[in-house]
Image 1 (cartoon, rainbow, N blue to C red):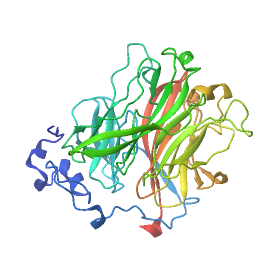
Image 2 (tube, rainbow, N blue to C red):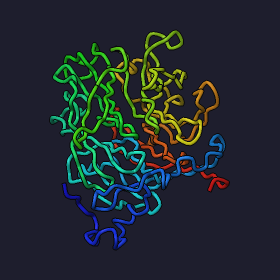
Image 3 (spheres, rainbow, N blue to C red):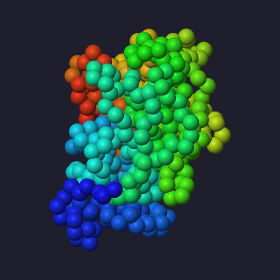
Image 4 (tube, one colour):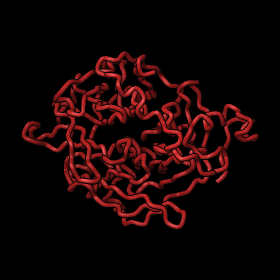
Length: 402
C-alpha cells in the first residue's frame, strides 16, 4: 500500500531531507524512507536504552507538559530514539508520528482505517497496530466487540502495510467480548506476541450482561510464514475468573505480560482489590507490585533501571462495588516504586485534583526506551464519561547522565 505524505516536498524522498523525512533519518534502526529497504542492524546503532541509568528517580527533578496531539488509545508507541512517538489520531483513524523535541506531528503513515494503539518495535523497523469498527449507535464501544480486532504490521516509514493473518482459533460470538479499555490488541516490542483481554459467557451488551461472565487473557505468537505475518497459538494465560483481569501490554524486552486484576486474597476481602502484576511468558511466574487498598490500573517497568510507574486512585479511592466490572475510578495519579512495588518506597508524580471538580486523572503511563520520559494520558469525567482527554509527557532531569 502506498504511503500517504503529510508534506508536499516529501515526494522528493529522503535525499531532500525535508521535515517530513527528517524524522526517519534521525532514527538509527529504521528502514529507508519510502523504500521499505532493510535497515542497518540495530546493534550497529544502538538506541539509548540505558541512557542515564545511574540517575535516581526517587528524587530526580522532572517537568510535565501537554503534547499537541491527542491519541485515541495507546500501546507504547515510543520509537527507539526516545524522541518520536507513533500514535493513532481519533480524528481520522490514521497512524501518525510525533516529534517530542519539535513538538509537531512530522509524518502520517496510514490512510484512514480506524487505527488504534500502535507499538513501535524495539529494533525500530516496524510498527504494529490494530483496527476496530465503529460501535453501534448509542452503544459503548468496549461492550460491542464480539470478534478479534484486525491487526497490521508495516515498516516504520509506512510502507509494506500487511494485515496479520490469524491462523489460530479465537473465541467470538455474542457471548464473547474483546475488552479494550486501552486498545484492542497489545503487541510486544520484540514483535513476538499479541495479548487480548476477553470476557466470555456474557448475556448482553450492557454492564449487567457481564456480571456472570469470566475474564480470560489470551496471548498468541507472531510468526512469519512465506514472508507474511501470522498469528498462531492463541491460548489463555489465566484460569477463567469472575474477577477483572486485563492485559495492559508487555515489558520493553517482551519477556513479561503486564496486567491488572482484582482477584481477592486474605488482605483484600471478598470485594477484591485491583492491583498490577506481571506474568513471565517463559516461566509463568506472576509478580504482584501493589497491595494498597485502592484501584491500581496500569503499570510499566522502566527499561533502564529498577523502577516501575503505575496509576492509582489511592488518594481518592473508588467504592469497592466498582471493582468486579473493571469500572474506571474518578481519580488516578501516577506513582513510582521500586521492583518490590508499593511495599517499599513510592513517589507520587501527579497531583491534579479531583476530575469531578475540574482536575485531571492521570492514567496509562508508558516509559520511553531511555527510561527518562513517561508518556501518559489525562482525563476529565462527568458521570463516569470522559469529557476531555489530553496526552502528556513527564521528563526527568538528570544532568549527570546527559
